[in-house]
Image 1: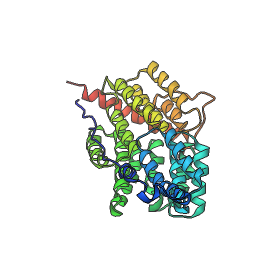
Image 2 (image 1 turned 180 degrees about the horizontal axis):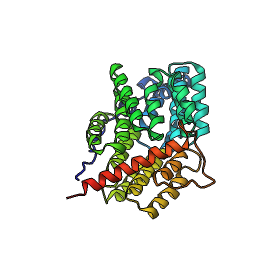
Image 3 (image 1 turned 30 degrees about the horizontal axis):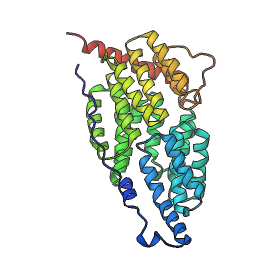
Image 4 (image 1 turned 90 degrees about the vertical axis):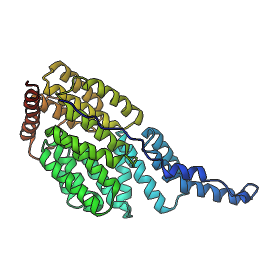
Length: 352
């Protein structure tokens, strides 16, 4: 079976970078009194947060957190930019696995009740999800509404339960709602996640979903969602492609440059799926060991459980347990059945 890889297209330039190039002191500031220097510093502070936020999609998150922290520490930002900068700092901290710092930042923004309060509440629900408290996330999603991306939040819960059908319905609803609101970025995000979950259960349909994701993402700069789409190609090809581990190694190197820690764990889970499908027990054991290292801070630790479910393996006594929506037994059965169905699919496609 011939598989197409997700195409790479150059990303559009950031307006923030162009704006940065245009930021210059007016001629009268050059030899002006000190109060003009202070005014110029404030002006630069007003421009730097959006510039740093734009760079967040391209540079290592450690550097982004450092930049945004420095801007906040200056004390020169108006309230609306403090909210914006704090929110994106918390998002970058989340990507780095700094759960406590991220939660504190999201709580500050949510409590302030500003225009990013709904997004911050979604961020708090996300942090509950990555810690494995799924019933809490489902409850919180009911209060989020469109502004809190409620459908996507639910999709993020359902796929880890092994309920891909329910996850796909949620992501489709998220995409439709985003289209109704003219939210191009959110439409692309929802489509990337839809392609990911479909890749587990329907490799042929996944081709179309991945093509659409590529087209929607190409004019944007959503690096983490591009990674989700690229990891989806590995999930789609699991069991079929002998070169999958080599392709995963290339993607892992790219993830290392980006500093998006959760993507490395997600990619490792895709490798677990591949090795469970081909019944490569030693490779699966090595994958699980690596996955345990990547999630040792408790961030996405439930991926280790899912990997055991895939391989029909018992959980070690020291495994951190998630709060599954339908309980551990049913979740285990769903994931194991996904592996067995793919194994049947691979066997059928390999027949003459």
